Length: 247
Image 1: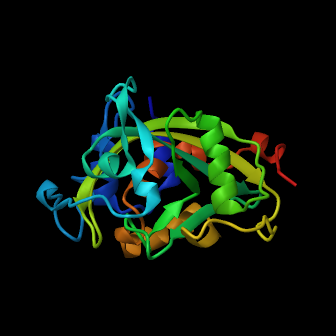
Image 2 (image 1 turned 30 degrees about the vertical axis):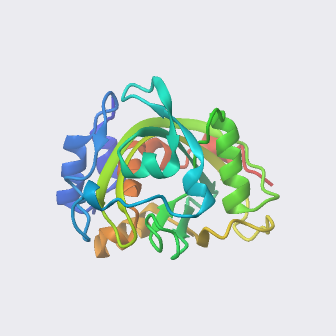
């Protein structure tokens, strides 16, 4: 059970209407549909406009598909999962610095889904039969750098859904998310080459995130607000975490 007084401390100047809407939608026992709180500025989801699968290989990759209760029920392509509301697994890694800042990334503008918007941490869609910790380490090496190794601590599981039109595609996604946090000693470490899907990596305080969100909620992919609100402990720096700083 989330303690909402903790969230009020974390978000003393939050966008009140959206925050209250998300609080009402949020339960950890059921699907967390954030669409009513964050409707797409590009229009409602229209399944009649999905179209055929793009040529990019990643859209043809197979994923495990689950029911709402995280029970496996089959497989589908990434395109089918992201456009027809099929529950699948996603992992997030939230790197923290000792000064309290945490990692945000801007997605490359050419990406079909939420291209050019800000995301939180490092993330990957979990591939067919892939273990969750392996997917999380893959996120670290593909998006932070091929030489990166972080000690990960699982901190939250939450299911989120969002649907709407976007400039490049119809999105109807249903994610069983698993979040990990990790400590880093220095934001300037060169971890080597990273995936072209990442445009920019920046470290912000939660206050800086909130300031940007207050300017325009759709500077960010819509699931970002849901994850930060619903998994608030993953975004706090605790004294115990300082003992696990990665060199």
